Amino acid sequence: MDCPHCKVSHDDEVFIDNLMVCPHCGCHLRIDAAQRIEYLSDENSFEELYANLKTGNPIEMEGYEEKLSAAEAKSSMNEAVVTGSCSIKGRKVLLAVMSFNFMGGSMGSVVGEKITRLMLKGAAERLPVIIYATSGGARMQEGLFSLMQMAKTSSAAAELDEKGIPLFILLCDPTTGGVTASFAMLGDVIAAEPGALIGFAGPRVIEGTIRQQLPEGFQRAEFQLKKGFVDCIVPRSEQRRFWLRMIDAHSANCSKNGKAGGAV
Image 1: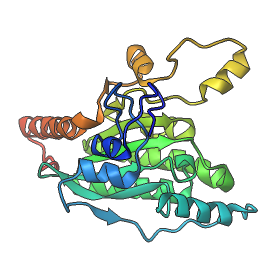
Image 2: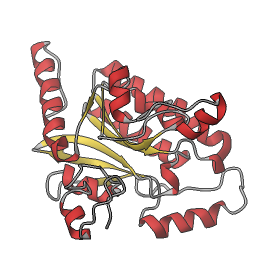
Image 3: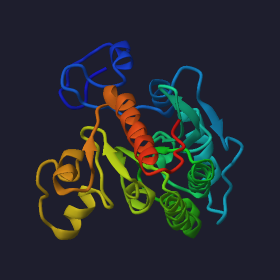
């Protein structure tokens, strides 16, 4: 396999063992949801939630069922997000992992419902919620039903905030459109993977609209960090330790203020 950034070739096993990060230049390649869950969660601790939710065709879009079937075959998933509970170094959390392999990670009714339910569960059980976002935005095949998920997920994030339960977001390549414009920018901590494309419209759309060439690295994680749109950049190899620090910091703050924290 050739790295898309430095073009150096490595065996597939080298990339897999290195969490799909190029050992030569550090480029973070896209990774599927199952691999993320495996490296993030304690062994055998992940329990999937809401797996029974199935996508319909709410506006009877021609050809949508065939696209869904093709996406399932390509990704081995039944939707663009996997949700569940797990532990990270013994700390129990709720975890949502989106996958760009399923219709570009687009957010339709089921994606929005699973993420909403997870956040409401976090609020009810006082458990931190971690969401790995990667998406091209709202799913056009579901029309207005897809756009409604932006308000629904944002409302659930507000419920977490009201209860004082942390919402941790990790922005992956790419995170754009309606996902960026809703829950993905509402985290208490918004981290990003190195090199991730983060924005609303993509750079080609912006260049075509303003008829100007954008600066190098525009909308990449490093650019967004300088502009204050993300709090930090966390490489894959450091993410477990990073979440551990965030969870423990929240628990310590709850103990200091005499509140019940749900992190441990």
